[in-house]
Image (tube, rainbow, N blue to C red; front, side, top):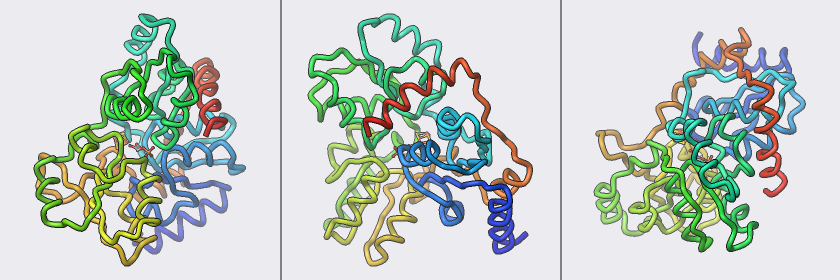
Amino acid sequence: MDKTQLIAAINKLKKEKNAVILAHYYQMDDIQDIADYKGDSLALSQWAAKTDADIIVLCGVHFMGETAKILSPNKKVLVPDMNAGCSLANSCPADKFEAFTKAHPDHTVISYINTTAAVKALTDVVVTSTNAKKIVDSFPKDAKIIFGPDRNLGNYINSITGRSMLLWDGACHVHEQFSVEKLVKLKEEHPDSLLIAHPECKKTVLIMADFIGSTQALLNYTTTSNKQSFLVATESGILHEMQKQNPNKEFIPVPPNDSTCACNECNFMRLNTMEKLYQCLLTETPEILIDEEIRVKAVKPILRMLEMS
Ligand code: 13P
Ligand code: SF4
């Protein structure tokens, strides 16, 4: 099938099966364009909680599909490629995280949404990069808190809230890869550009940034700013929507360390393709399934987050 036929076939199946397509901003452009809703991790969970579709196709990574299934257990949740994992979620195995929480039993456990269902089941409240500051701020200043699994986001939230949360030592390989050397050079070449960065980036990048925020916050910032040019230090999929909303502004992706590529893509996110999206709607596989005991425990901290957002 060519691209036009694929688009028509996906739309037909979606209608016949009362399916909804939710896509993260880090998906390839064609998938973002065919999605019913596209957004950051928080928006995806909000839509998954309230949709009346029978099937949710989550175009993102595995933990996003799991979150949708946890919130909508009676719906069929599909992901185009089951191998679309996440290095950050993988950096926090549930058994080791459980041992960490047990070693600090007087601590509240706050987990980033980029975790497995089993880690969420050990958590008091889930956060995303959009609401992490607000949720941490809602706890008393002297509250004892464990924050996992992203050390960069955790350090950043500690710095802007004046906390000293205990951090799990995990990270996202995509956001940790930005090259400071290439960034310094880019800044010299584009002195009028603003550097905007996701808080999953290393501190060495964040201290150079003019604005730090979640994927949605970065998008909003570029739209409301009166500046014309931006150096973007996050996964380059978001440039598609930034350019769409701001056709006259310039967006320059910050390159990673160890490649000749000009932009930084998440290899997991990019496993999803239009062909796999079509096959997944056609065959209704691969489907996300979650152990009910874990789901019942994992839904509580996610609902708490949605109430606090
Ligand atoms: P947000 O969608 O919260 O910005 O998170 C970025 C990310 O890395 C998703 O995997
Ligand atoms: Fe995970 Fe990083 Fe990819 Fe997001 S960009 S899915 S945090 S590996």
